[in-house]
Image (cartoon, rainbow, N blue to C red; front, top):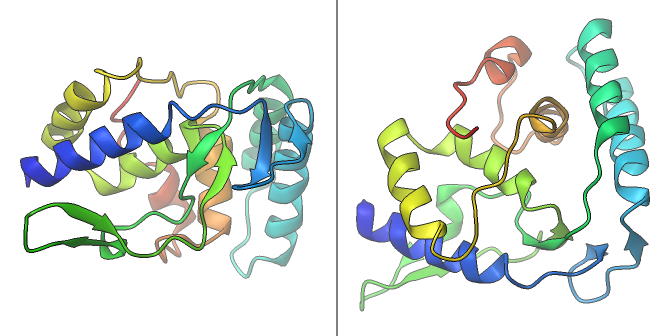
Length: 173
């Protein structure tokens, strides 16, 4: 509901203010910003080679080109496997995150790409209103394909139809 969305947006807004110039492990990020696009491309290439679902060559090529143009400079705590079942509403109606093992430092855009799979357009609008009290909404245009492909290959939501996954409606610019 809107109350839970607001709580989550405030939570993410505050988490995303915890900026680091390095990424990786939440408590000890050791990779620098220049490593991000290189490692992202390598990870997508590695995972696509191990996937039972073939990734079309043109999709991989576009993703690799996009990776090479990325210039992430700020890394924040994110949950790359975020799903609704990792939240619980407490008796006092506060929202609690109960699955914390996957938290890492990465570009906040990764979580915003995940949100496009979890929110309706109306929920997205409500989420943006609350989150934007902390900082602007990131532009996903130049990273969406690569992050969507990465998340698909990580099987974060169990989707097995790549075309369906990549054609998910765009909720944020």
